[in-house]
Image (cartoon, rainbow, N blue to C red; front, side, top):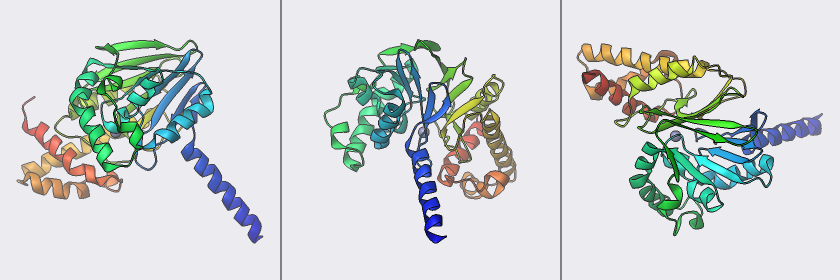
Amino acid sequence: MRPLLLLAFLQLAASLAWAQDGAIKLAEGVFAIKGPGEAINTGFVVGDRGVFVYSCSLEDYDRRLQAIRSVAGGKPIRFVTNGHHAGDDSGCNHLLAEQGAFVVGSAELRRQLLPYWPKRMEEERKRGRVKREYVEGKSLDTALPVLTFDDRITLELGSHTVELIFVGRAHTPDNTIAYLRKERILFVNDLLFVELHPTADDRSDVVNWQRILRQLATWPVETVLPGHGAFAAGNGTKALLEMDRYFETMRIKIRAMKEAGKSLDEIKRDIRAELGEFARWPRERAIPSTAEQLHRELSTAR
Ligand SMILES: [Zn+2]
């Protein structure tokens, strides 16, 4: 029996490795790539007239491009966009643009990338975790959107239509979702962390973030691709409401601690234990910053 068990184990390990490496099908022509651990997830669409890519991490560029190619074959990557400007999301823009893709983004994304991207690439170069040729001698121009929009834009891929919708300040000032209306799929990027503590900071607007989450949860959507954390085809909108409830729980607890006379430092230190079912989520390093932002929002007349 032993060798058979070993064989079964090896097959299981191989299939798990494949699940991590490859493209995960969400609907006909619609796929996602799971970020390793807590890392960013990529969404992409393979249409008759080419490929659309949403969020891509440079550190993981080779694997993600391979996953795209494994289902898209030689079809051109027509469009790339970002849920927001962060490096784990916008890091592949320039490499895809060099292959002929148009970078599409909200005017706010462009504004955020302008000062951010060169600094981030310089950090990546120094840190040495990405191939040198991916960062050296690269210009900001190729990473910036060449097609910009204020509120929304529709991308036609023949068999598929992708609506990019700027939702405004939530996690950061430039959050944009991708909506596949016909396939009932939403790519929401960092509006959603699934069973991971999300990050909010002084660039966030958590009240607005929650409003957006509750609104999206009313859409006729079957699958939601989060920025970070687990997902599966048909997972529905439940996690959006759970994220809303996470913030609501934290706000109520912070308000109570504030009223009990606790200082901001004490609140940041003690809030985790108050989060009940959410307390055990990984990514706890994000808690102090999120708590501080909620505290800030509670202290500011709105
Ligand atoms: Zn992110």
